[in-house]
Image (cartoon, rainbow, N blue to C red; front, side, top):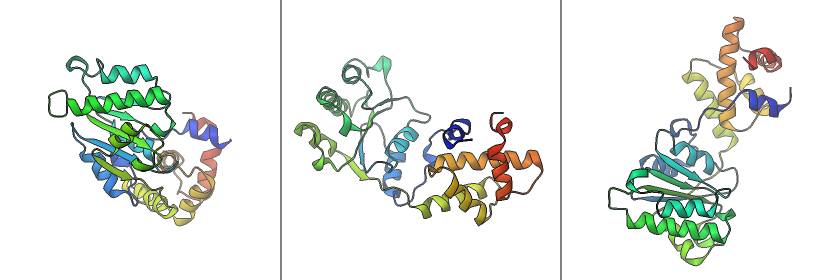
Amino acid sequence: MNQQLLLEIIPAPVPRLENTVVGVNSAAIDAAKTLSAGHALYIWGVAGSGKTHLMKAMTYGKTARFCDQNTSAQTMFDLATQGLNTQNHCELVLIDNIHDMDSAQQAAVFALYNHWREVASTSAAFALVVSGDRAPLAMDLREDLRTRLGWDLVFRLDPLSDEDKLSALETYAQQIGLPLSSEVLQWMFTHYARDIRQLFALVDALDRYSLSKHRTITVPLLRAMLSDRDFLQS
């Protein structure tokens, strides 16, 4: 069974701040956890640093609107005008990948920043989160928008190291009462996905499989599970 099919069969858990691996990004994640209405957060980093995961994790349990480069400029303009009134209020607005947005979309985000500031001290206040691939002053954007990216909190996200991922995987397994040998952990890490949420999902599936087979967890058992289509699709 190819890896892409496996990733579809064993879906990653829903992003939540509680299952976000901190690594060296503790300050940024703490800011995300405590961000309140009337405040803004700009996070930046290279592809694969976890920006989208963190932003989606912030939406869990909240009334939120998530936009990215595939969202039309008109939709974002609507958010900045009639879309966030008291009848249709939300706690959180997130704009992902602003570096990939065209001029019309950038103009819409500019209008959204202005609206965020106008209502910051009112009952219509909302938190605003934007992500990009560079620090605010280095962004290739219209000047008035670039300055707004630095209006409030700014944090860089760094990709998790392999050591961070292995440590998080081991900790997660221990938390659910599933001690895994270093051999099993290394096999999962080198033969499966490097995405930590997919690895967490694999641990959950392995826990269920070992219980159903009444067998100790070993690399052969893990291989058997990944070959057992009936179990994976159940």
